Length: 124
Image 1 (cartoon, helix red, strand yellow):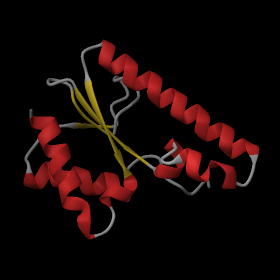
Image 2: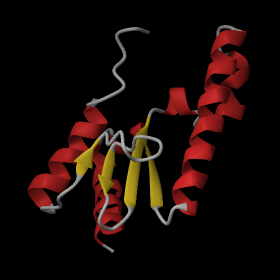
Image 3: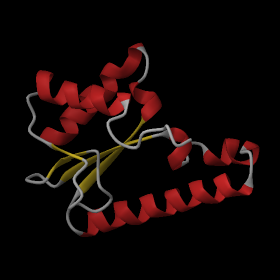
Image 4: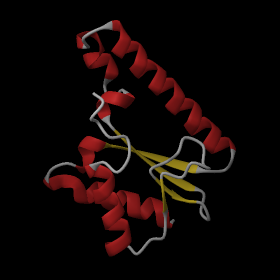
């Protein structure tokens, strides 16, 4: 588990490259000053994009939560999910709009609709 990256993962790199080369959008990566440390942020428009791993952030947690190896991981993921909810709520209260993208949406051949969704979100 210690070899799993939290920053600059392959899905993030795909998004960064798309926004920079195709859309020519100016953005900040992993901005620590913004609540929740979004993977992509456009502070002037108050937009934040989180590219989250399905396992770590609880995508379909209720479906596979019982099959996790032990209670430690179930609790860890629940804590991550609560923190994500709090971060999104704080961002909204501060006038930000946030978008969550799951890593599996950026894998394979069908990633273009997701990339276009992110591009539109950051330019509205």
